[in-house]
Image 1: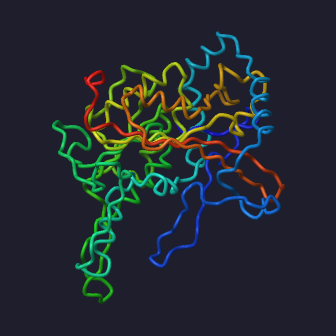
Image 2: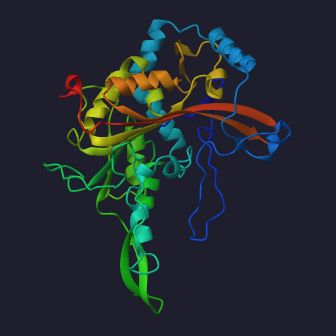
Image 3: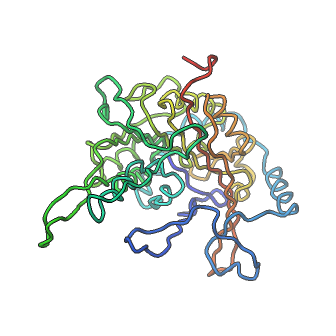
Length: 387
């Protein structure tokens, strides 16, 4: 249920995220910079690139944004709000029926920002390239915390028979849409070296799927889930897609609590009604193993998409309905921190990505505000939050 961006209530394609691609390295891998590495130091150079990072707003600019939001903050009548809530599934199914898999780009930047999504890939790849004596590189994983090892240690299997029960590392994406996060994860984790003989080379390595990793993906829209399953890259042996309503506290997940290493929420929580957000995050937190992490990227307060909403689109404070009936909320860092902390998770990262996007052809500038978070489930839960 990854959300589109709207301009005056009309869906605008492919401006939810920015893809930055640099030339390939000598190893053949495409290197992508982390967010926050391209700075605009000379305003005269603004149209030299498509995007600039960490753009500071002036006091006047922020005051104008607040005023714009206040002007268009009169909420719709309650009966209309209830109608949008009741028909939410219908609107998302219609969205994916119209756009299918043509709306969003694959999010390959995820592995730069969230290396937890490729836990063993670099370890396995670096350990076999060259010869068998190559030293193992440090595994990609959670940032090292004080007093904690940075090694990725396989966790014990969870008892029970369910999809992915034999895997050692399990990832769940909530709001998977048509698979723009799931399929890059599956591709990137094809990292196990397989020794073979090809092209007259006595030793030749190819990359096979990581048998220790399993990916779950769910979406509110049954149409989106069917599109995922119909994709030629969908592998039931490595992935399990299912329909799920994140806002339904009583909905059952196809795996037990404390069984997931990573949960991914990319432009998804904002599509939920604000009254359901805390319970939903708390339910997801129970699915994490001790030491597991929840990764989020979503819309920030005063993002361009929020400022472009006209009157008659506001449902409640900072919560809007698009022209196609789908809804979106715009967060602050403190709001998200409170949600995660209340769920018993500890902060690893909570940052604002203020991006200046540029349309060089039309000489237009667009200010984006996104929030990126990582929160970890502690290895020992406080007594008041233990189940």
